[in-house]
Image (cartoon, rainbow, N blue to C red; front, side, top):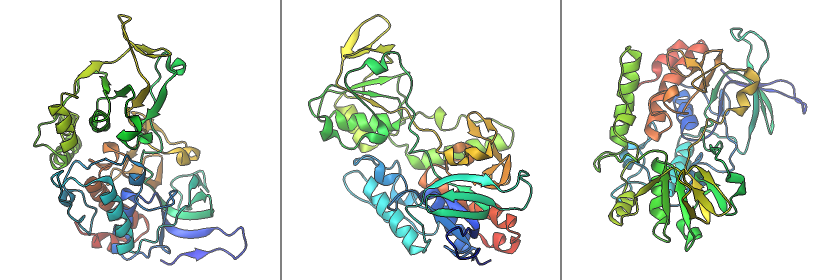
Length: 386
């Protein structure tokens, strides 16, 4: 199904079968399966990435970030991530992941177009069940696609909680997405807010250069030392399967919240993992609790999570459930209000552990099968193997 271009003037609109928005792990995995089925990258389907370099969100993450699993359990489909063996016992660092994703898109010649930011996805007809393509407006020209896969992740949409007095705080406030290295905070009074993995890893680093404070909304829950991403992925999968069968499963939340990667275990040995309860407000100098006791600080690092980066889909006016666009279909990724649109890699609501490297592959496979069926190419759909 070759791609065409309508006309040859500056107002040309490129026509493709599938447009994948986002060149990170989820977008690459979908591209892999479409290519395996015989579609041609850059012609039959395109991957549009707003970043100016490969690796998705990984190049923007902090320098000392470690995966929760060994490389053999952190791979995209088709090619296993090369091993990483050092003092961290095989948990790959950020730069190793960036190199892997860079080489992955080169290996499979996925022809990612970057930097090309998608501004909006719009209907060319008001009936979502019509066969007319969707219009994708980008920073470098528009195109139409019979199917659109949104795989933009969450990193560009950090969540900042609203706390009384936050605007009066005279120190520095930053989100985990803006944190880079502990040396930037040496000698400063730092507060790390949040009870998840980002907070624990950042606290573990910062506490090596200064006397950092950890504040959480509830007591932090640490996973057993022998539990890593392999167990988490299996548990998340079982939870989704149980839900599909009408049952219940506590999922990852039943195990705990924080993976004990080597840096966090080291912080535990140093006694740096003691958390204080959440403060009630901020003032000019720092935190204030309900009993009016206070503590001065120079820096607050908000490790409070992210929201899906979906502003480009706003013209579609998708209905939501639990704060997310409603999805369903055979892969669980098809927008309920717009079947020509799939959402991949945003979290469990778009597939078990789909925001992880290994989880993205399974969701991408199932989504690619549905996409090929939508393109009336059932034979190619069946060609996608496990």
